[in-house]
Image 1 (cartoon, rainbow, N blue to C red):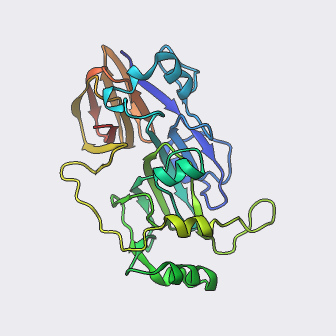
Image 2 (image 1 turned 135 degrees about the horizontal axis):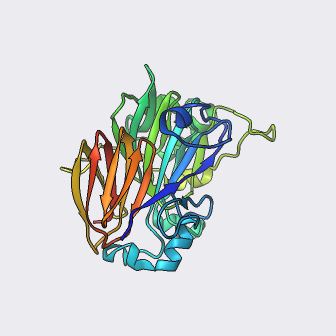
Length: 308
């Protein structure tokens, strides 16, 4: 059973960069700014495309619809939709301060699932930072007041970021990526975001971008977020487990779950099912459940994403 290389769909959000995804990660796009590359996505807002194997040229959702849920694995039988979306994000400017709702709230109000996510810092300029939850417990009334008077950032946990740092962001956690960061984001398959504060920026239409304060007040966790310990895993939740490998490694993809591989550094060769595929920094690959033993050779730093 072959492994499939995916081509991303890209986004030109106004805070995005101009070169790092192209020059450092080999993302081919005419967009400027080039803010995000959705390297593994079957979301209707941006499906990625298979560019290797017998389904080359099909979108990822077309492929999944054709082969059926067996490609997801038995651990995914509990999901109505494919559970994971993987992005590369390049921030030249600060992103908005935002929050994502829980499954319960998002299904009731948005018609799709909520969003728990995790970030791995792939590049970090000196003094780059992000916001990650509150520094202390706050009330809903204080939260609303601080949004209104423009002092919300005084309440937030501001974290200096270096390359390799990992952040796990449960739904309900107020957060924002800062300027000068390239991030790998592993997230639930959702595109629901509530902006709380956006520095009074205007979009391409010349208008300030809309905020979603009332919804944010309903879903935001007002307690400080404690970084969890995932033991041997880089991250873990109901929707994804993430492991990291540095250098050559062997693993197995049985019937319990697909494996998605994101090459964060280096280049090498993926051997799976009697076939070999050259891989390099910025590539994302999908191995259907039941693909069996596989090896990644070469000087790669690789994320392996699956459902456990």
